[in-house]
Every structure is written in structure tokens, then in C-alpha cells.
Image 1 (cartoon, rainbow, N blue to C red):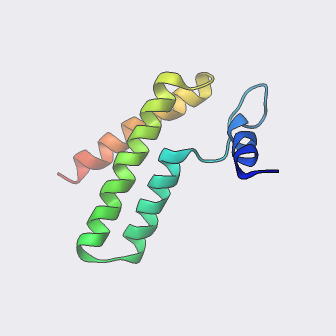
Image 2: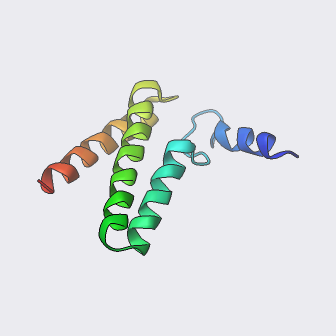
Length: 92
């Protein structure tokens, strides 16, 4: 099995009839990388990691809210957008 086939299988989601969980897509992987950087670093690198996390998670959340495969995924994306906005507003 190739990496592309494995990636495609992971993107189908579980359960197939009403996907709730799936292997992380690129925006979520970038968000995870940003969070790891923020946790591992101090100073400017920490700030960059937090920014990358927020932007990438926002991209994922917007995609789910607008084009989610079912109502649960759209609701999950909308909830994540609300959480991101609330978190950023709290930092102002």
C-alpha cells in the first residue's frame, strides 16, 4: 500500500455512514506543528508557533463549517471558530 492510498483511506472517516473522526488533514497537521513549536520554544518562536496554530486551526474550522460532510462536522467547525475568536479576543 502506498502512502497516497493510506492517506486516502484515512480521509474517508469513521464511521463511513456518518464520518465523525478522520485522519488529520493538512490544516490540522500544520496546527499541530504550530502547537508543538509553541510548547517547545520560548520568545519569538513560541509566538510564531501560537500564531501558526491559530491560523491553521481557523482554516480547518472554516473548511469544516462551510463544507463539512455532515451536520456534526459543520457544527464542530463552527464551534472551533467561536472558540478561536473568543481565545483571541481574550488576549487583546
